[in-house]
Image 1: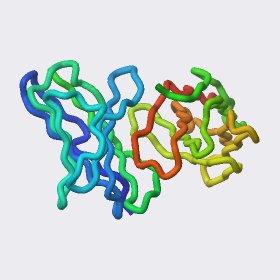
Image 2 (image 1 turned 60 degrees about the vertical axis):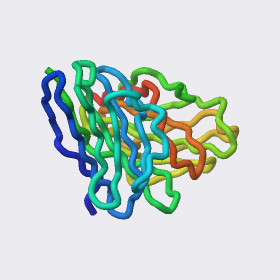
Image 3 (image 1 turned 180 degrees about the vertical axis):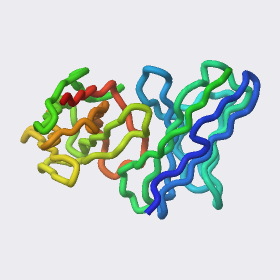
Image 4 (image 1 turned 30 degrees about the vertical axis):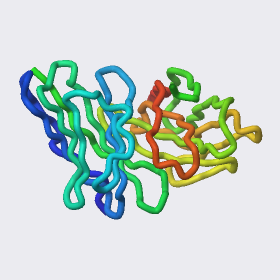
Length: 114
Length: 111
């Protein structure tokens, strides 16, 4: 009964590079959420996706950030041309198709931009 | 903005009950109270949620006042591993939208 999986757990990038963060939801879950936690701050919602659809991206920066949740495979959060301010912990959560709203979180990816 | 108010920090002796309060005076009739915790550098962990009745599971109990304007999360026998930031979140029932995290309560369990 695996929980939400995220990889990599730690990612180091230099300014200007791309970062790709992956999230595999719990078995049977088709809703995925991404949250960001800046150092010493609370979690902030970024984007909510269902399979092949972005439902709410109101918390995601308009530039350089994108997210997808394809029919097959994990959800991907992509950050292009990373800057030092992107250094943070990125958490993914998932919930069931049936409308059960409890979100279960993964262990997170710690992104460090040098 | 979070619709809840929690004390920034609390201490609890190991083995004692930890009672974490949360005020949600503007809660609507269809909004649930959720509790999560975040142990240092880990992902948030779901604890419990409720609408108006008290709830209990293997982790904790949730006591919601009759007017639903406040609630208390109870960890019956706190251990050192319960040291974490505890978040109280109100959210409409059936909603698939995002969670709004406030600053939470930093619970320190001391030996």
